[in-house]
Image (cartoon, rainbow, N blue to C red; front, side):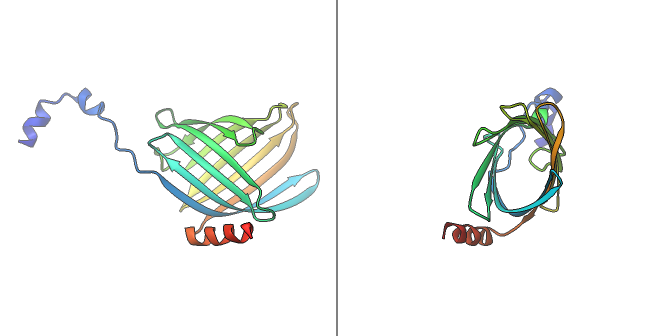
Length: 171
């Protein structure tokens, strides 16, 4: 019976069937950043939460600075078929576009270029392996001069540890 159904289905009909999307999920990280600018080095630490929703075609990232609890959110509007995305920061400091590498929703890397309202820009190259994310960013002035670099490592942590750190920041 199964063979008979396949025999009556053309290859184009099979290809048109939408792929089953994974359910939405949340990832939790501890992040360390090293920023070099103007001959100085700065270190920053964050707790990070990423909300990935294939059905909505979106990713929302929350970076919470462990020094003072400052929240920065990044929104990605994802087009998996084009292997691309647009991004914006909640504080309207940057907007940009990017491309993915690897299978949809299990990407192994991505690149983006973001531009600030004053014309400054950031080039970001990220890789993901074994659940960890490594990012290398370069910040340029509006006239194209390199102003800073940032290397950032996000290590996966359990939700309970993320929540404990968040609660400590909320005091």
